[in-house]
Each structure stands twice: as structure tokens, then as C-alpha cells.
Image (cartoon, helix red, strand yellow):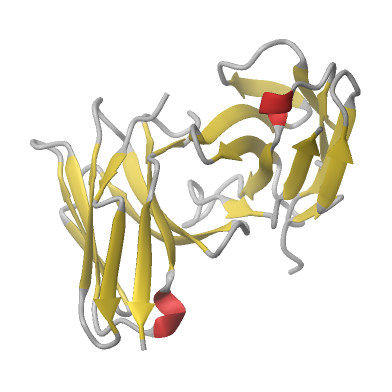
Length: 111
Length: 115
């Protein structure tokens, strides 16, 4: 069953614009992770944020976590055509439990 | 380090047959997880193996099974294939410790088509 639900399901923006994707989840978590998937290939880990953290940055990526609202957002700044992919959030309830993925946001960046 | 490898990359089978997929994790990783990805259900967890033992199991029928060998390589088997088993099967490995302990490293997947 899906724990995370991403919003929007699809997003289309121009190169150079910022892209924001949201993820909501249902139960308490140990950490939340964001992954990228290019066209039917394997997933690539982008960033992990722990339940006691509120914000993390990695290059052009910024992730926030609001545990009171059970939600997270992924911001990609100054997007590029190469950022075109599907983005998934995944939650982990505790250290050794499986990741539970949302259905993803399909991002299209138009050059 | 070499990444996670999966073989074969593509597979076509017919209903009722069985299939075995293979996954070689990153060297030093002892945890291997399997996921099924379909357009309708998204990414669903199948099972996880750690040090040759199944540590977690998802909600799939008994036709789906797996194992892990002493070198951490893992196989999953699907018996009596059904049309609905057509999917991208992804394998992921993770490190036993360190800063990236909870991060999963995914292979390219095996695309299974059941006719």
C-alpha cells in the first residue's frame, strides 16, 4: 500500500524555473527520502531527511519536512532539461523497515 | 565501486511459466530489497534479504519468492506467471552502516512481459 502521495501527479515547466513537488504520508516516520527515475530505469537517491530535521539542501535541491502535517516538499531550483524525470518520495518507519513509495510526480522541463 | 547489476534486463514469458531474476549488490552491501513497479500500483515492496535471511516481506502471494547467497547476490523467482506480473522488477542494495545507511542503491531493473 502507498504511504506517500505526491502532488502534483505531473508538472511541466520551462528551463530555468523552479519546480516544487509535495509529498504527504500517513504514519509516523524515521526518515523520508526522495528518488528520481528516468524513463523506466532504476531509481537514483537524491536526498534523505530524518524526522528530527526540518530542512536539507543538496546542490539545487531543497527538501523540507513538516512532521506535524506529515508532509514534505522537494524544490528544484533553476531547472534544466536534464531534470526531466519522475520523482518519488519514500518513507521509512524505522531503521530496518522497508521503504514505502508514493506514486510519483512526473516532471517535464522544456528547453 | 560497481553499481547494482540485474540480469536479465528484458524477459518475455508466457502465462504459467516461471522466471528467475538475479541481482548483484554493490560490494560490501549485505541488504538486498526487491520492488515491483507497474503503472497502476506504482512501486511495491516485495521482500528484503539481509545476510541470507529474509528480514522483511511485502504483501505478495507465495508465487513470489527469493533468496540470498553468501556473497549477498540475490535471486527472486515468480512461479505460475500471470499477465498481471508484467512489470519492472527493481533490486536495491544498502550499506550496513555509515552515513548512507538508509539509502537504497537501485539497479536498472528487469522488464518482465508476460504474454
